[in-house]
Length: 162
Image (cartoon, rainbow, N blue to C red):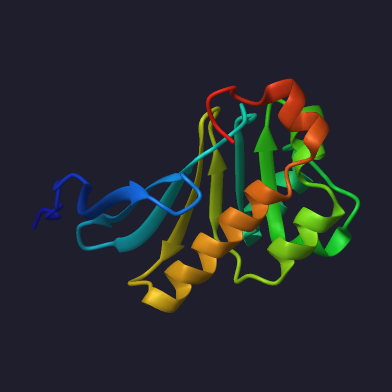
């Protein structure tokens, strides 16, 4: 008897786009992996050029990989290091963004997948996120953007965005 595999590719549904009162462009959507998982993703346009960063809740496999020599970025807050696995090729720039105030704000949240690209911040939440979770992470992203230091904004800001 052969194994039957569902080769249905992942797809996006429930896409919403718009700008908030502060002028930040947002996209919210569900990412569906058939027969496996559903994630809600929130994407916000960044007012600054961001380093590429993947910040994911640390798993047992991450801890095992670290014991085998896989490198990750560490911050001064050990509880944060235990909660998140940070992957980047630009550690100096990331450390300017993950300062103590930003880390404190992130520590109050249920861990989620965060990804930074040069123009966007994305957070993906497992499962069928309720509107309260989406609002919590919407506010967390807005807070994170507000906490970007002025010197970083000066060096990496886009002149047409606030």
